[in-house]
Image 1 (spheres, rainbow, N blue to C red):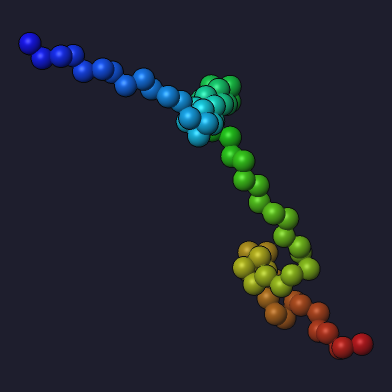
Image 2: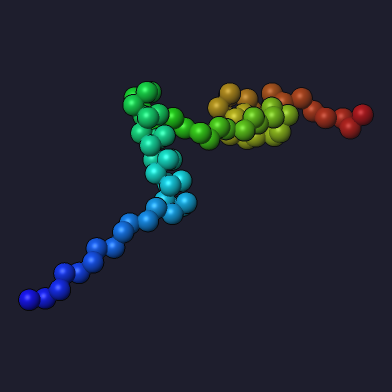
Length: 71
């Protein structure tokens, strides 16, 4: 008869603990809101910065822009 193998005890490291807490918090968040909540927020973009896409969306052409005399 063969001797029984000893089972290894599972040890929870600090990294495992952090991952488990994050996962639990995320599941609670989804349960509370019905969907994942995005933590990333879009930075405010200054209107003073020249942005061709924004101008095209607004329907502003180069003819509509005021000329800068350098004064």
